[in-house]
Image (cartoon, rainbow, N blue to C red; front, side, top):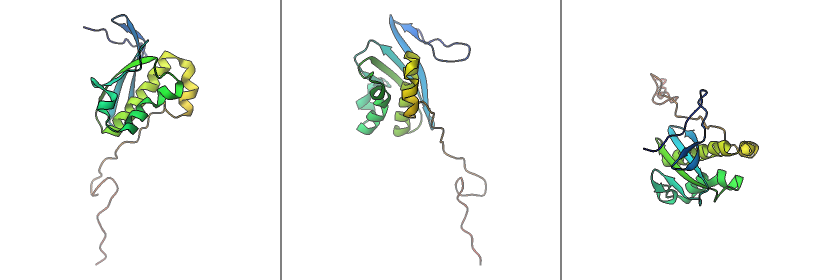
Length: 149
């Protein structure tokens, strides 16, 4: 059974070893999607999402572009093999959760990249989620139509 990434007491991701390959772990989130990302150093640039190549999992090229944006920005395209497990949400939400996770894992690899990733807004967790339905309303804020007579 492979070893899992260890975390410190303050639950920050920490690098660990798996079959003599070092990897950097981070979790990314968007809406209800959660992506668990592992960056294996010394790779060829392969990205695997839920045990499928990224181009097969995300059929739209825009989603693949969103996924690779932190790597392009930092110039680490071919440095890592990336393994991602993502659950919940829709396809776009999953792609953005993967992007967030990759950006956070790159920080574990090299803290110097923080200013570059922060300026591009890739480290900020987009916390916008669907608002709950309120009693007496049709949706979260949509009230029934008012009739004067």
